[in-house]
Image 1 (cartoon, rainbow, N blue to C red):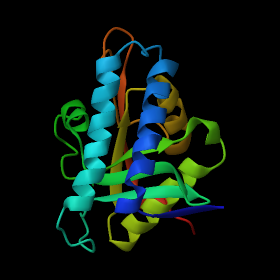
Image 2: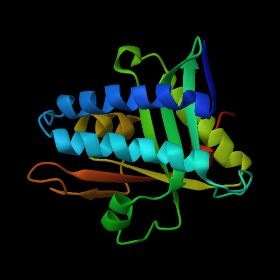
Image 3: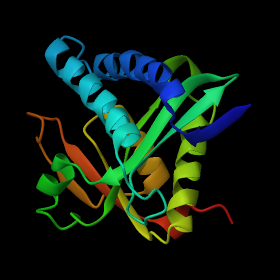
Image 4: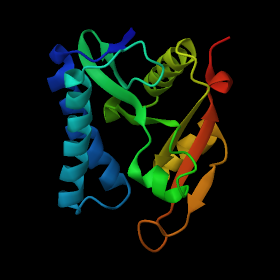
Length: 185
């Protein structure tokens, strides 16, 4: 049974473990496992998002308030998802057209649990909260080819594709999604 809640200080080590496991695996799947500095940078960046969320003094009821959710099985953190201001890659790839749209990000599930619906449950929980807050759109991006295939199936064709963004043959994709298209009816 998967439970999904906002991250707490008790979840930090579990969330970090998810990043430390999934990010190197994602890079390796893409044939980029040797980019150790980039892998460490990505892990550090995701950890800082969790810390910023936990330390930020904001009105969690505000429509644009950031959030980090964790999925747990038997009390163990097995996945994460976040929402916040769109990142630099999205701003860059869209010529700042989506700057005011919040980003779904930091969606990671432990590799051994892929295919069990945990990522979908995290997306549903996040979208439900966005709808509750009156948010009508979100965006997301990916430079990982495997994730891009999954996102195409889940979210349709991307809003923008930037060819060779990460080097020859490595594109970056950005999706713009309507919250209502992903809410449970």
